[in-house]
View: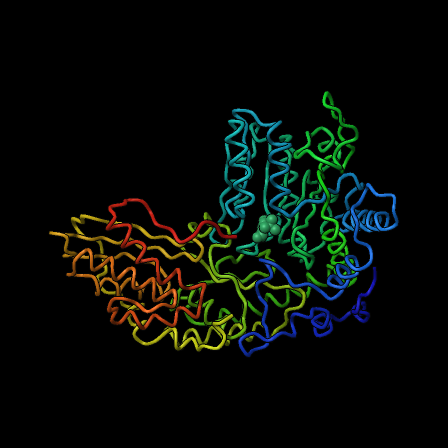
Length: 417
Length: 154
Ligand SMILES: Cc1ncc(COP(=O)(O)O)c(C=O)c1O
């Protein structure tokens, strides 16, 4: 399925105006203002090509996969399995068997915790996470620790929101069995030194789980170069539909893991005495899979490859620098998360107003940001703030969006100061 | 959606901004007979309400609040309204305030709190305005537990 409209994106300059045309929702008005969408870390908007792909799938090909002999089922199966190849390429996995479709990051982490964690952890073992994790990379580990008697350890961060490397090194020890961490923090934007973290974990034979929810829309992922054991992300944050995501796992680990859910598609033969599980990756895809979601996600991945993830990362870095500079000019504004390696997240508080009041004023101006704890309550406690305002960038944002944000914040100051 | 047509100035009237900046009856009581905490984890509003009742009358009221302007103003105005009144009257005010937030005619005189009626147009903010009232009801019910506006956030 083709239909990429951004023909001229292949040049060297990054034409954000052309990219904006690919996202129909950006033409919308909100409260009498053009929409300024800066809540991308929560969920990103969809390009026309993704919308068209879904539309075409439902109009032309819809059927269940892997079971019908009829034409529609074959077409749906082909498109679904093509989605697996596109996903494999997107993260540079070694084989298709290592690419499992899940509902999203949360399900990917829970799958690893329950299938791998539950069978490998024992009393006395340790699971190591970091202070900047999203709740979805905390709670599944708490649950499996409870079930197995293992202990959850948390690596501290510094006042910039960066991992304290010495502490990380000290915490990775003989008892460490699983090390789970975000590639990029959703609340702070910190890019973790994931390659080094994996290396360190491997020194003690621990298995690594990377939460890539915030990385997939912003930078090129290469699971083989990272050498991580598991990597997971959500489609909806990378311009794909909701309800679909990817879990990558190394083949030898996945093979040894018990299935997580039982049902159709994940079995080879079933009798009441004995069930033979299907081969990878189907062993972990019980029930009718996320067919339309996978096909839509593949369209989003192709779109990102077409634009070029390296160019996206470079453009966003420049935009982040501009936004940081503009926000720092606002009196009484404190940025939360000032790591030297950072992706497009501007999290902040202001002395004159609570984040929630700021969010209401901005919304009135058509500016969509997130206010709250960003599913990272321990992090809010660490910075001693009740919540933050978070503006998060995507490939279609431009300087005008950030200028609109700043104008909105000036209004906040006028109203509340 | 409905928030669009109404100016933030309408929501953040001077009276509300004033109570938001300088909440009345601030501080914990030495010997409260009742207390309750309120928590809105999604937006980070947090308050503790202290009451000293004597013969079913609210003699003293104290607030600790770390919250948005709407929540703080509502708590502050509430403290002024119910202080010195009977417990039953305070509970009537709580019902009346919730009715106001639900778009109904409040059965009891709410005084300055009527200035919060514009919150109705900002559905995501109604729970901010109601938090102190939930805490008041919990405190008067003698419940020591925390009241919360939310189940989950994402
Ligand atoms: C860093 C991070 N991890 C995990 C998640 C959970 O993703 P999902 O809700 O799509 O499963 C998110 C999304 O909010 C996130 O930002």
